[in-house]
Image (cartoon, rainbow, N blue to C red; front, side, top):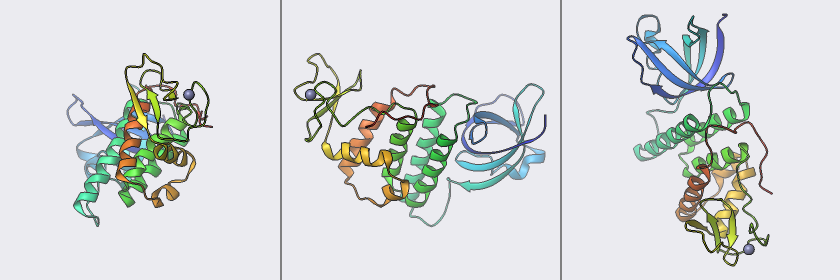
Length: 251
Ligand SMILES: [Zn+2]
């Protein structure tokens, strides 16, 4: 097979038994998520630092006789595991947040399904987190990921009575992920999260706004925390499928 040039973010190093070889899970623009192996010695010696998690690289790949992608050459385009400028605390925060972006992608998408919108979302989120260390960006990434996967529920109206929500008494049940007003919340609901109107508004703004706009708004720590809780609830439904749909249920 001819050599193939792809761009991708290294999500993680995968444990590998073979001596002198390293294996990485990489989210690429052209091939989707793939496993690629690289020789850890000799030829690729100067790529050693290049081939590490949270690096965005341009790879020259070839397919081995066994059908695996192997790295022939790699050029670093950006590193999100940097040592520069920002204060240590901010730097640590942004590394943690970008690691979480990588982990979510690693866990929620199937191998070998290219998705350009998702790829752009991942790279853009990582870039902006890296430059701003703004904690809201990670949550914005999650909201947009749910939007891209078509699993962002309607969080404007009560699921039962359809009344537009105008107060802080909103309940999202853990099993169905529907949102209810206090009056309609099913009596047998065991677990649900409460969400204030401010947080719902923040989520709706984020769902359609550009990252540049999102990075400019100021939110309270309480709002971010509440959005984080809501996102972790909504993300439970994202299994290793359905990221092909681009429709959003938000209306
Ligand atoms: Zn209702």
